[in-house]
Image (cartoon, rainbow, N blue to C red):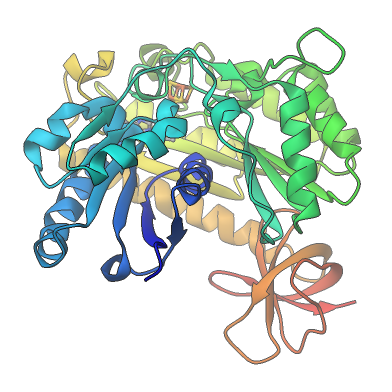
Length: 440
Ligand code: 5AD
Ligand code: SF4
């Protein structure tokens, strides 16, 4: 009998969780686990959770409820909760769902193998510390398996901004940046394994200030320039940024750094100064628009993306209209928008709430405007020549799918391109979810 055990990880939320799930799978690889796509086949199921909005946490509890049948069938099955819900709820998860064997917060993933061993002898394991040691250092070297052409790499974690609605400073902790040499080593290693595009991740990635090579601390722009010199790496992206941390060198890099892609996710949340102040954002609508102007001066074709919250406590119709005006002024190519969700323990949770039907209506209107802009930006690509990094075969024979430098999904029919190939493509039409192109 083989002692290979199967691990199923379900990932919720942001890209950092996607990265963390990979690292958790790698850490448990040392304990004899291989990953599986089937929860029924698993010896351990890990839910890597998100706590950013209420619904996200509720989804986890209902998923745990659904796992009861599997656990009844297979009593040796271990069930773990990782990520930000684990951090925020801690032991409460085990009280609410006794079938949970293991709860691990985002800063303790390197301790997973020891925790897993405890569950094997029938114990429960809980760790939601913010440990002294650096989990990235404590995690083993990454295995050498071949990788998909686009990868995430966490360079910074945590946030010191304390926006009044947000749990991140509590669940991910204070801002911490990884040293540049470790990031460069990980990037070179990813490239050796077939990666050609790296998205640098951080909750506040442009506040990056890790120890640089040769002393001193580096800005994100300095790190990007160092990555620009990595042979075989063709594309660099980063997310998510705060407007107040867009340094001059980073803005300039958008115009001058050859491998930095023309796409920027720069959340603003609201276009009303009154609401921005109450959100503790420390910027105004005007300062954001000025910043966008400077970024566009450096890179005129940059595609801009944002995050918006509607129905923040005390948001009036006039505040909401200010957000709509800001959206019209920017013209976004992409955006994510949410109804405000009360997060216990955050300052805004105590304030007078906007009626749900009002917030729902605002969200609908905002999303319609964004969809219109997004579609217009996408349609404007028709006739243009873009570069596409091919990531996977498409649904039809001979079709290949990839991403343009602007992060648009592009498919090419009867393509001779292979996965991992970067090619020039002319866009011939624009569909609902993707652009169609022809190889040049
Ligand atoms: N309610 C709604 N949206 C939120 N976000 C963060 N906290 C909340 C909340 N309490 C959104 C913000 C942020 C994105 C990641 O999630 O727009 O930029
Ligand atoms: Fe949350 Fe982003 Fe604000 Fe930090 S900057 S508190 S992560 S919304």
